[in-house]
Amino acid sequence: MFTSLPLDALSQPAVFAERRARFLAQLGSAAAVVPAAPLAVHHADCEWPFRQNSDFWYLTGFDEPDAVALLLPQRPAGEQFVLFVPAKEPSAEVWQGFRWGTEGAVERFGADLAHPIEELPQRLADYLKDAEGIAFRVGKHPKVEPLVLQAWAAQLDRAPRSGKAALGLVAPCPLLHELRLRKTPEELLRLREAARISAEAHELARQVARPGLLERQVQAVIEQHFLEQGARGPAYGSIVAGGDNACVLHYTANTAVLREGDLLLIDAGCSLSDYYNGDITRTFPIGGSFSGEQRALYDLVLAAQAAAVAAVRPGFTAEGVHDTALRVLVTGLVELGLLAGEVDALIEQGAYRHLYMHRTGHWLGLDVHDVGAYRLGEHHVELEPGMVLTVEPGLYVSDRLAVPEGQPAIAERWKGIGIRIEDDVAVSEHGHEVLTASALKAAAAMER
Image 1: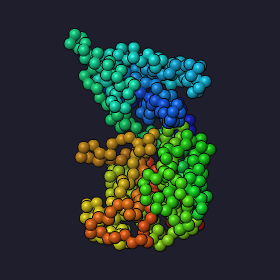
Image 2: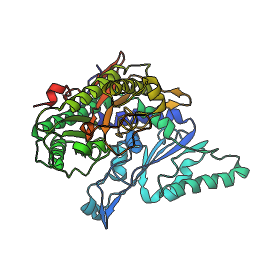
Image 3: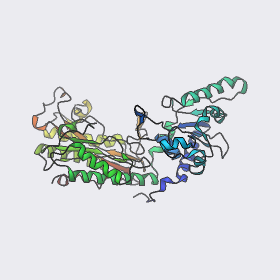
Image 4: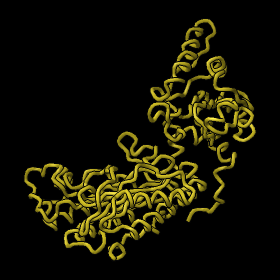
């Protein structure tokens, strides 16, 4: 088990300072420009609830829009972390709420220096002076990008006379995302908390789901629990899919009536105040028991998931986890008569993809589909302690995709069955920890 830490551990400035120190060490002599997220318009003059840029949050813990962080390893100590933030302005705070301002940026968030965001155009070039490179993500920040390019161009113009200029514009993402891929004990604690709240919501949903309810009424129970437990809300659009709707992977309409005899697939997780996420999927019969076909496919998906989870350990790979689940699924589909042929050939040909068309999981952290490479060139990234991934095999039987040539036609009794089972799994020193184990999934527990 991982080290336990107090729940407010991630609110401590020292946590973010340590992250910045690791990032600065990776930068060498390149200066990094990392913008915060802007406010996003929903419609007219109404905005979406604010969601901070995950890279900016990871380095700063500053949760306001339209800020910019500079990480400057070429500068002396005491000048290496600079924040440009919205100034304290009472008239703006009346409409949009509290702002920390420049004083708060220094005192609360550990900035060495802080300036109003309006001063970025005048100050940026000077802060980037003497950097051997500029680390900035091009194409994502339209307000900041012209300022970075202008400052870089000015350096290049002066280079023939001064002999100094940033040699290149590079993306900070590979360095920063490599750090984010390996979770610290503090982060794992928060992911456990997100998993706990998410699992409780799934248990509540199974208790209330019954024929005649709307899918969105179950969604309301889930998301109410998220809010009552202090989460920001759902980490993504909750999927509450009855019957054939479960065969639509990203179904979020959630407007249909639940019907006796159908399965209900729920893919939902919460996002905490500091943006760490849960991501769980459970599938169960609505108001009763599995049919024979439903139970056969459920048992197969559950067996594939169990084998894949058991494979999570240091030195293995996410690709290997997927391959483990896939082989169990394809073998079982052949036994059930939904596929025909040799298992190896079916996998190589992709002849199963009308029934299973997605990967078996993804990294999890500040983003639900979190950052980090799965392969480097020809080599798959090996799992290490601190990495967290989902394990989520599924089967989806419908007429939406054509049956490949040479494969058996699907009998009507199988159609409209969609099943996915997903858990959040942390790689530990000697194996793994299933963070979402408190959400039940045994077939007997799914029936009532």
